[in-house]
Image (cartoon, rainbow, N blue to C red; front, side):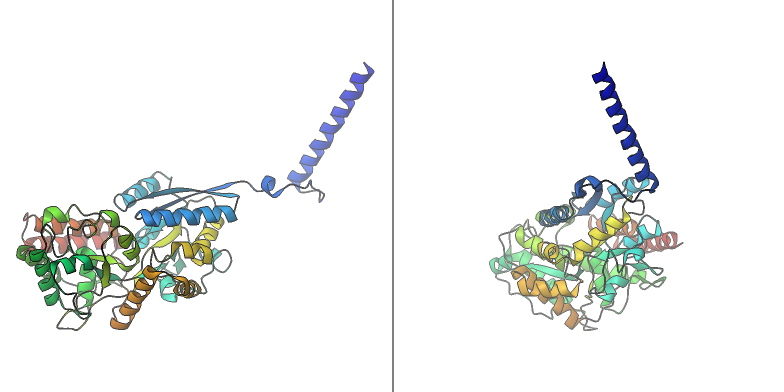
Length: 437
């Protein structure tokens, strides 16, 4: 009995001590707190990250995520990645449900999501968790809207024309000059189609090509609240490709609609075409998806203006969700993704030439042949074109879909070039007005 009484006394005393200790920690009234290990004191932070791309981008990004988790053991990053098709449809659904990823890769449509109020403003973290002092100012400006900064630019790229040199050699067609014109482009495409069985000379350059086409004529899609082209420009663009399909140089509609934006499933990798328009940062993914030899060329020049219309632009952005529970940790990850030399060495040029000058210098010194080829192309563009950076149209996703549908209506002979172009231009103006309100 005496043993039981003594035991009860000891237990009661210990409970009283623990209770007082806990109360002191909660109220902050005691400066003498129990020492805890780092693993016990730091709760695990979980962040979800979404991006699109081909397999090479997925592999590189996953390695960087793993590296970040190694250096920050209290952070767990759940990855959500896919091809481009359906990516923004899924993201929009997640946003509507209040379930957006914490970290999101955007394209030129970042402005649309900023306007919806779903992107995290980052100004409070710049200079602290997020360092931008080594970033090209134009690329910082590209993610700044109404004076607020919303996302780090993942790379600088430029549109180009990818040529399958192996198929050129098989067709006994010489590579074009570096200052080829649209007239030479059409002739080359027709020769390739004639000399290659089951392969067309070129794929359609689509909407991005139209922007370059306009820049060659000192026009633009939309800037500072103004549309910088007319319906006649749309007609001229679609007529160019209709003529090329009819001459046999461009892929027919049934082949063109089978294309995807995933390099591994692209028309040029599948050898269905010998030329295809791509962004320079995609070069490595295309090269890794084939045994053929590819070379990247500047866009065909306008023979009247002497311009190729190609300009430097941001490839993608990485941004935070406005409803994230961990904005500071998001900013830290963005900083790591674009500034850490070890992380950026893994990413290479997959998303474009880095905007951090120190990172660029490091990759130039250590880069492989693909890196060197991309840097050489970026240098080619910067030395041959004065085309300005033009942000994407308001309502980017809807207007891109409209452009694609218009192109398909023409190519499947469901509408004339004139009627389809007029309808496109009218609906485009309506969309711009809707998204600019």
